[in-house]
Amino acid sequence: SQQGEEDPQALSIQEGENATMNCSYKTSINNLQWYRQNSGRGLVHLILIRSNEREKHSGRLRVTLDTSKKSSSLLITASRAADTASYFCASSPGGYQKVTFGIGTKLQVIP
Amino acid sequence: GAVVSQHPSWVICKSGTSVKIECRSLDFQATTMFWYRQFPKQSLMLMATSNEGSKATYEQGVEKDKFLINHASLTLSTLTVTSAHPEDSSFYICSARSQGFVDIQYFGAGTRLSVL
Image (cartoon, one colour):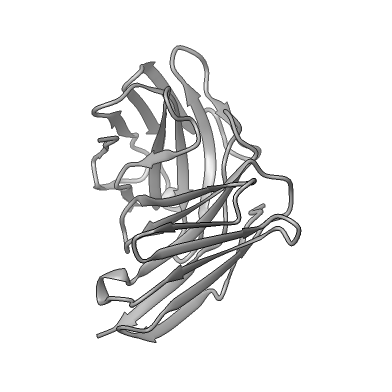
């Protein structure tokens, strides 16, 4: 079963707006990652946040992690049409253990 | 860097035939490769974990004899769908983890398999 659950499952916004996606997980983690998948393609790694970090930035991306609530959020600022994709969180106990993907949020950015 | 090539990107085959999908890490050595299956509008389902030189570890419910995995080198893993049937039609994605940074997986572009 999937450990992570993204919320919302689908999101449609206008270009220039911010998009926020949330992810919850169930067990202890070493790190949490966010990936993007364009339709019919593989996944692209966006950002990794470790369990001892609370916030991380990368360009227009901002990720937060709240280990007490077992949740994370991905914020995409000033969205662009090219950001249209599905976004998955992936939680990991760390090391060589397997990563568990959430169900994903499908983001549509309308030009 | 960290490019994973997956081939073919799309394959159509007749029921009963076998299909081989290749996953190559082009610019790094992958001690571990993963094979996922993804149904439309769903998340990735891990099928198996493949370590170079050893037998793959399959997830519960995945038939070993149906989905043959070979990880012959640090840059190549193959998934063979044997005696394919229409219910095997799906999107298959591989990923690779490098020796240097085990936390991140690098994904291939995926293979869409359609079994007629």
